[in-house]
Structure formats: C-alpha cells, structure tokens
Length: 67
Image (cartoon, rainbow, N blue to C red):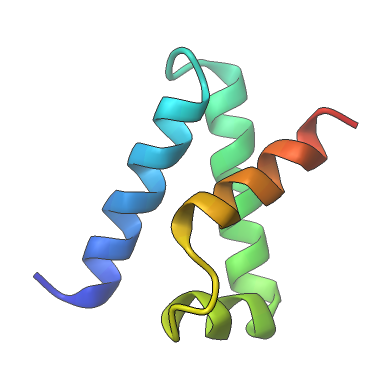
C-alpha cells in the first residue's frame, strides 16, 4: 500500500474510534479533516513528514467541534 492510503485508513480509524458510531459527528469530523488537509499546506506537510501524528490530527479536529 502507498503511504497516502495508509494515512487515509489511519485517519478514518482514528475518527471512527473517537466517535461512538459512524453518524453525523463522524461525518462532520471527517469533513473538517479533509478541508484542513486540502487547504492548509502546513498541516498536510507536518502529517506527511510525521511531525504531526494521526491521533494529534484527530484530537485537534475533535476539540474544534466541541466549541
């Protein structure tokens, strides 16, 4: 598998485990992560260079949804 595919699976697993099911909170958090990775090159670079871990990315997005 390619590194990008492994990252995508790890992000999906992390978000699924963060949310109790695959309902609305799951979709909202995934959309937020996709938007972040699409529009913020610095976050994308940190994730690809492994200075930002997948759980840290999930926690960051999880905190923003509770505000």
